[in-house]
Length: 157
Image (cartoon, rainbow, N blue to C red; front, side, top):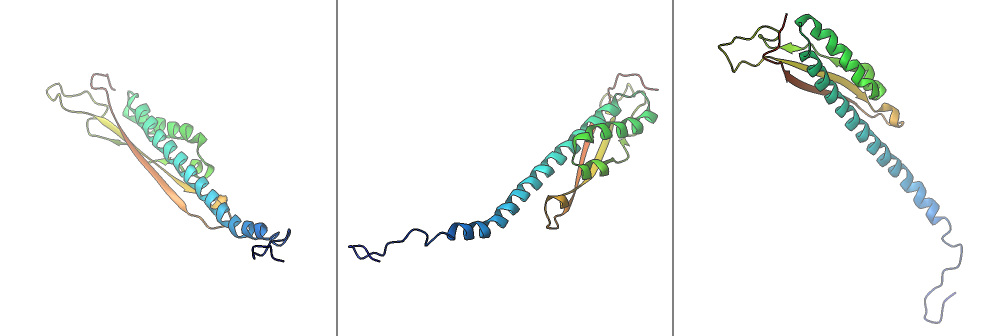
């Protein structure tokens, strides 16, 4: 059927399946985009929590008076900080061995004013994104390090 200007008029119902077809084609791409956004958000959260755990553990270690108490307080601090992390990261979070420079937790040399004792803590976790969809996503290792100086004038045992 044509109009008086020679154009063909579209009758109601001729394009009724077009929007359904568009939805079927676009839906998988939109779902993949959504899962990718969730994966990046989960990575950002895990990265932030691992960084916070390393920072908190190093600072808690420098608050100790004894070198022997450092490893225990670091493990305890990392565990409590990672409570809000995604399950895969929380279960795999582990602090590395703390690095204490040679003068840490000893009485400082009064003749060496530039000497700075410090504790360095590295926290690592493995973040899995496999539960986001049926596609095999990846596992990401998140690793952060923080160094905290010890108070020079504090008494150590």
